[in-house]
Image (tube, one colour):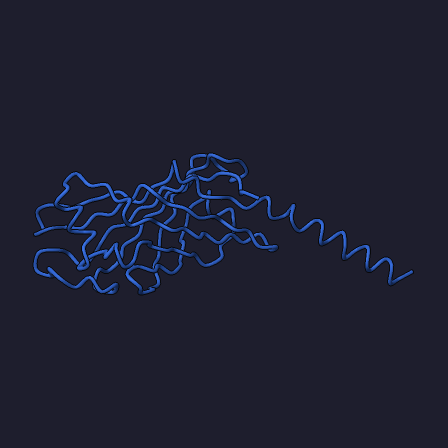
Length: 188
């Protein structure tokens, strides 16, 4: 009897596991983007917008969320075609060899995505992975329970830490990075 009860309990838990995954969220690529800005000669700012972000926010059994986002480097849009070619070249993003920027966060309480706070994680760019810290802005949609919520986060990275050490006299080492991630329901 006890063995049958244990088997039934394990079967019920196994069936319940896929339902728990349905609370994961995917990043709605058509409504998400990432912006960057870097100072040029301390007089001008070069900026661009990555138009393709894919990924998901996974929830673990303890209610902690992990953001896993991939940015397509060649999706960058800029006001100047010359600057776009320049940032895609080997001395900067090296899009031909490293087509994606990958961010994966440390697990955080799901509520932090709506209330705001610190989002620590690791950023992989140009074949190098470095720790990064973003500040989450409070989400206008409140508690994250439905699709359509937009998460906004801002951080700073060092170009040199990712091997982009050229043009040190003309370009700032500090790059401002902003993420606008729209959430959608997880794809089963």
